Image (cartoon, rainbow, N blue to C red):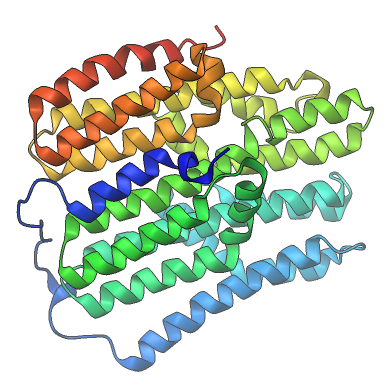
Length: 391
């Protein structure tokens, strides 16, 4: 596989980012009290930087405690309660999530002997990755809200990069090695685009770069969980080899990775999202887990999500959202790139869909509505077909 082709969609996306959409002036956020010239005192900024570093450090420390040969459960619970819990709760509140409840239950189950230590370790590790992902999104929102104040926006973005580098990058590098993808390079390019956009005052370019980072991280979670080398297939293989205990650990990893995707996918396909969650749930016997059924449900849910983004792009023609959702649609198609030849019946059909995604993006960039409409008319039936994959 030639690396340059692995991220073909991302490459065309980056051309969109660098060139802008049409040549219209960049959209600027409304002035508000937070974007006035008054800046936070340096001491407050240093405290915030230190807080992010402390959270990243505490995350690594807790994962290390949980993965030790002999787990000190009292130490793990104390560490979580004192250094991480309040931040996890704040991310839960902002995202209608339940990560604190899930981590707390897992730690208590490990201490009581209701769950094996290896299972708890994976739940804790992967749910803390979800917290890092939610934290990155929170910093992106802060940067966007503060966009008119370059210094503040850059600081928010820098904190997002700190969460990424400290908690998520190693996981994404592992997926790149397994699938010969270049997600780390795409994420680096997305961050660079966001930094340049802040400097130029180009809010649309900032939001496009944000989508590259966001969806590339989501793709890594998918590759880890439901793609051809993900835990859905690893569980089935381990069961066949008579390694039920290892399969259960893999089930915990698959479930915890999926938690970072569930809320997004269930907005568009609750049935398949619920199915994936139920398959990875530890209450389900590992013997029932089948890689193909989980993979197909993932493809259906991601295809429905992509179609929703394209529909939003069509509906918002002429606005910045048309470009942003066109980009998201292309990135969701790229998310299931390795599945497309099998799902569509041939590599040629898979390539054709990606070319259509490029054509649509090019049309948005040129503000050529006729060409965009024609491309969407061809993309939609293919996504409709993918929505039925495996049924």
